[in-house]
Length: 72
Image 1 (tube, rainbow, N blue to C red):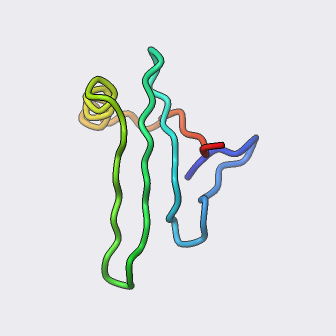
Image 2 (image 1 turned 45 degrees about the horizontal axis):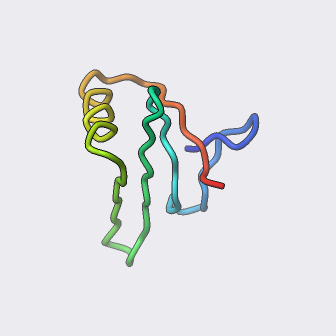
Image 3 (image 1 turned 180 degrees about the vertical axis):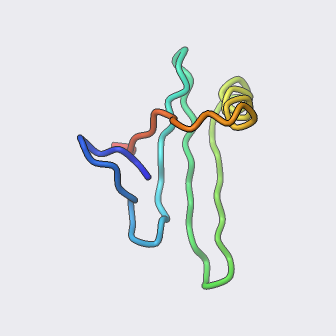
């Protein structure tokens, strides 16, 4: 899910697309998700070492809400 204006929606119907996650302290992680075929789905995370560490810590803590948006 990504926030676009006041609505949260998937970028594409199948869930693929590019997403931006704002972690605070000017740190951002970009998530790229795509589907190769009916059995293979891939996700890549792109960001600095500090932002990846912050994202890992948030996932370990189990925080339910992240500030996400669609890239412009």
